[in-house]
Image (cartoon, rainbow over all chains, first blue to last red; front, side, top):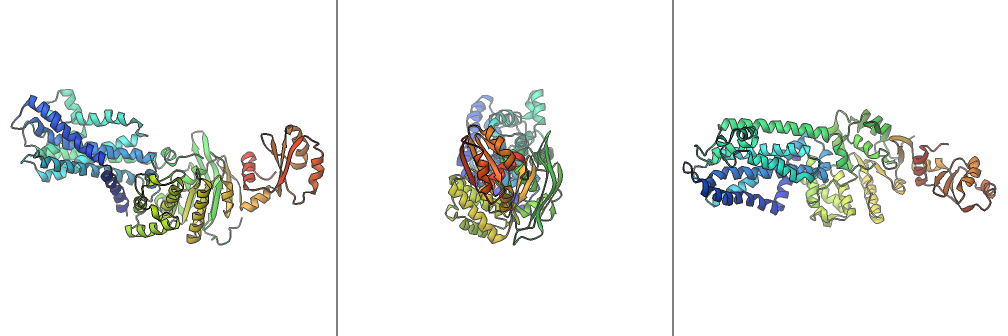
Length: 266
Length: 315
């Protein structure tokens, strides 16, 4: 019953992603810049630790980054959907309104996974994925991270009325989530305050899981156990889904969002 | 009143004592409606009178503060999903993804209604044909004209073959040829499917084709009936009087004709009799203070203005 409507939302996301090539290209260029500019620049400065150069250390971080940006941007289209007619199509459809949140969250995660897979293919082609890469774990880490990122995105979207404050969302949500995680440095090496913030950041555990998959264990490797990462990601994803659904059905099924949506005049 | 010909006795839409409060103000205030299956019903009223709020409550998008709604026999409060399955709603503003093509939009909409892709394909083909949009199938919605977009919005609204269709100002913002075209589509759809249609509009000449219309004012129904009957209830004639000294003219005419509707320097009086003989005597008492004196048949616009002004037709 509900499979087709959810599929409709996923399909629309993929159609849009394929058509918006600029979005796809920039999603690939952004991590590669980090890898080749920051990775190479800082790498020559910090040297190698246990045979791992900074550039290699950054690989799981930039895969996570692609998932984070991909999921966030896709989830934030929910706000755009509110402004355009698409949300009207969804709220009048015969499904409980929380399914809209589920479908949008899944579609954001799907967009993130597809973009991350494309990046992984590029990294593999460039020889940047080490021989110790555990692809099986990667196949779990990627969707788990993408879902958690989509969760962050859906919560943000459900509290944003318009995309006018997109720059603010970039500055106050996406960048902090990225920088205050283990993407760019091992969490255990961080000063206390930053470490505590990173520990509270669900995205940290996604990157950590990616480190498990892409880096050998050691000082430059993952900070937490795989089970810890999965538990935190699953718990956060569920909590985010509930929070966004609650917020959304409170808002949409019933005022005041409907007036914005329907362009109430009389 | 009795349902129109060809209209069943089963209620498609039934609302009792609907109230919607936003803080202190009541957007809808004690509205009751009974619309039999198959009826073509027009909900008319000025901007801000509560038409859209009423439609959104009937469509389960807004929860009423009080009152009961039954749609196709289902209680809207406890079965919103089932109700939404049996209705179609064309919003005042477009409910389409402008970045997707016509066909992609209909596929998206159809899948949301759990229709099989093959069924969507078939129905979309037939409806696009009917609405003259077959050539636009693979164009992005953003490239369509306003009239085409509105037509597509209606296609989107009826793709799942609802029993009841809500149209919220379906022709707003369109030019005359496009308005006519949209009306022809709605007429053809009704003829083909027999669906119940509830529409709001403020182009009143368009509501002439409705079986029944109801006027809504300050969130409550004030008058309802067949358009012709309402017009007759207003009067047999409307007398328009223009004068620079309108107050004096009204002073003379009001005792004879009842209170007028006044707009700028024109007063509109209702005249109940078919026979106009009595008018000459009244007119002669005015002297040369009147610059224009017109007698014409009333129409739904007059009913609208009268109801909007005084809230009722009976004196």
